Image 1 (cartoon, rainbow, N blue to C red):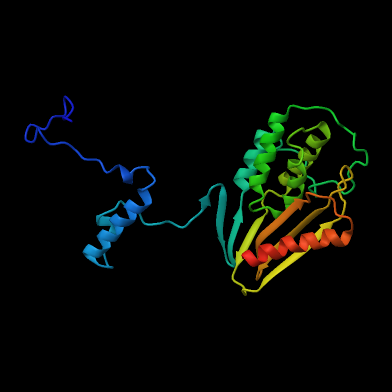
Image 2: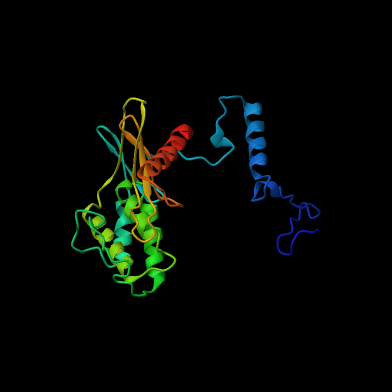
Length: 249
């Protein structure tokens, strides 16, 4: 190996650079960085000025992270995705639509074939995927988003209308989010199940939300894989899912 033409060091023409590749993208990268940091700490002690060895910057108060805005309030923090929600509404031409008070209709169509007209699934799937990410700070749309995502494989016109209704609800509640405040550390979970709610396959839907003090930290909405033979069975399945989440927490 020789120095490339035009970059030959006249003082040390026979020298070459040795690259420690393990620090740059290989599987051994974390171990090499750990060894480098450990060596630096051992050499200069626990009061080492790391900025002399690494390029560091003073951290600023966190305001926006992966589309989630963090706002400081007199009571704590408030997390919202208003900017991301506006992007979804703008991309779907619903930014100035008439808002609605509820995310889904209270009485869905009783006919399984009502409005079954094929549509272009690409845009539907893009919006459905975007709404899934919006549920990070919007548990109020988790159930409606769950229903919309059940038809991503073959969306019909009636499913598109359901999605549009949810967009109109988001437009009217675009400032909603999650508050985080100082409170006790009591863990509480609330569970519910809707037995045979889907009139097409008679499968149940269950959900739960878990609070740490006054703060909502976990929620879940899911359609059951099998048909529950009774409302009691559906409730027990919902309770089992909630218990598993609480034990994990």
